[in-house]
Length: 410
Image (cartoon, rainbow, N blue to C red; front, side, top):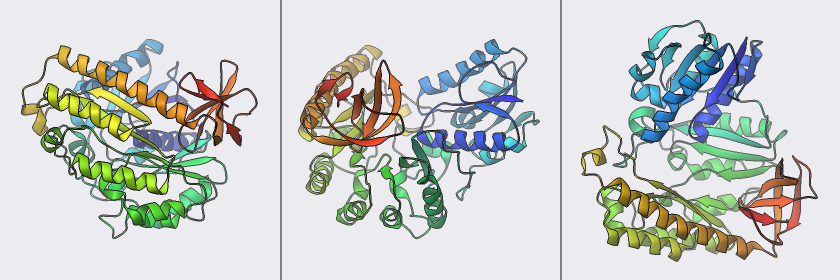
């Protein structure tokens, strides 16, 4: 049977989708991740924003346009949030939630709705096959932070960590066939808090891994001297730190229930740059949080400049029913859109400035794909590099000549 396993959402979802795909292939099914005509569609959905949930619903319609006779299975965060929105859609045969994704390959004949209680322990899944030059390794699930704008703790459950030995074993196997491993989790920084370990211990345990290792999104509080010394002990650490920010205004951070101040955040940035002067520090910024004034917004923009981020993902606030912030009075869509546009302009200038700063430097690049006559890939710092003198899958040192497209030409 031909089955499409289609992923919507984060890197954790991607890991889980790839694991489902491997299980299906081992059972003899033809599996693809592209939306094309198939006998069955398994949709791993997202609900981090209203738009993500809407796209998850739309995806069902897209699948049935490709094959009106196909069976659709829906799983993931959007169906955990509201199974009924999928149950009522024609063509959807089975709806599950976040729990039990490892069983989907065994349950293709199931019908109806079966949203299990959220897990309280980490659920192991089959290691995905290595099909790309970069591999994701899921080490943690759930979140205990309960930021006032975020629905994810209610959909993924409390933080739970994978056993250290299982992570190390998976990384050792993947390192034989991939150029880079990305450590990922719903709240990566909380790794180990429920099993007596820590993210620093995990990093130390990977010191023998002979391929690039890149951490996923980090919270400011987990980055300290001990953690950074651990990263320096890796053979091929990637000095890109995606340090979650969300706002550059202390007043807004407090309302968001973020547990740091801009001063503490900036001190962490300084610590990173003491160890890695050329580190690429990237982040996310929410514009238009309900309590954000124009003054607060301007504080955020100035803080972006002060830090000098290499890249900023700017997005507008999305009210999620069931969260504390959903009770606040929303700003007008026009205000949110305007602030996103202005913050985006600053982000673009910062990105260009960072790229200009790496020109003339030698970058180690993992080349991945052909794009318009160039071979493109990423440096350890996560700088997009284009070259006509490389091959996909190759790791080589190149000199960054000048800013080119969304990166540099080497």
